[in-house]
Image (cartoon, rainbow, N blue to C red):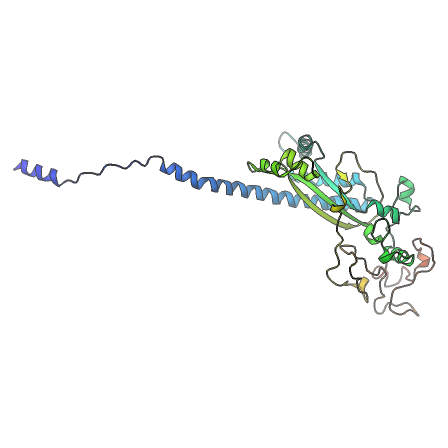
Length: 341
C-alpha cells in the first residue's frame, strides 16, 4: 500500500522544464538605454554651462563698453574692465584666487591657439570717422596728440555737415554721421571650453587654421566661440588710440564683418523727433540718422520763433558756443529738447 501511494505521488509530480539560458541579456539592455541617457545628461550639463558662460560674458562685454564710453574709447580700459568682469567665471579655490585662475585659463587659451585668449573688435568709430570728424581743438587731442571726435552738440554738428553738402550728414571717408561716429560698437569673440566628451574633437573638425580668429581657435583648441555685439553712445570724446600688441582689442578683420546699420524699423518717437520723419533707407540702429535738430516742444517756443528746428548763428564748421545757442541754460527746454551749456 505504501509503495502504491509512493508511486502515485511520484508520477503526479510535474517534471520541470529545462531552464532557458538568459545570462547577459540585462547587461545588453542596460547598455542600450544607458548610452543615450548618459549623453542626454552630459549634454544638459554642457548646455547649462554654455548658457551660464554666455550670460557672464554678455555682462562682461557691457562692463567693457561702459568703461570705453567714459574713457574716450581707450582700449586699455576696455580690456581691464572686461577681464575684471570675467572673475565670476573662475571662483577662487583654497590654492588659487579668482584672478590667478582667470590668468591661468587665459594663458592656457593663448598657448593652445597661439593667439589672443579673447578678442574685441571695435566696429565704431571707424578709422574713416576720425578722418571726417576729428577736432584738433579738443583738450584730449592736445594731451594725447591723437585725433579725437567732438562729443558735444552732435545735432548741431550734424546740421553743419549737411549745410556743407554732406548727404544725410555722412562723412565721405567713413560713410557715418557724427551721431554714429560717437557710438562705441564692439564685437566680442570669447572662447568657451566645452566639457562634453567629444565636443572638442567636433569643434576641431569644424574649424580651420587658415580662417578667422574664431575658426582658428576651433581648429587649434576645440573651443566654441561665443560672439556678442554691443552698441553704446559715447559719453566722452572718442580718441583714435593705438591698438595693443596682445591682439585682444583689434579693428574689424574684414569689411564684410563690419557692423550693419540697419534701417529704422519704426518711426522716430519722443521729444527729439517731434514733427520729423526718418529719411527712407538711411542707417539707424542705436544712432538714427534723422534730421538732427529737435523741434521745440509745444509751449517752449522762443519769442518770435515758431515750432521747428532752432537756428544756430554763425557759418563756421565749429561746435557752437553757449552764445550761439537759441536756448539758454535757464530755459525750461534745456535738457529736454536740447543740450545746453
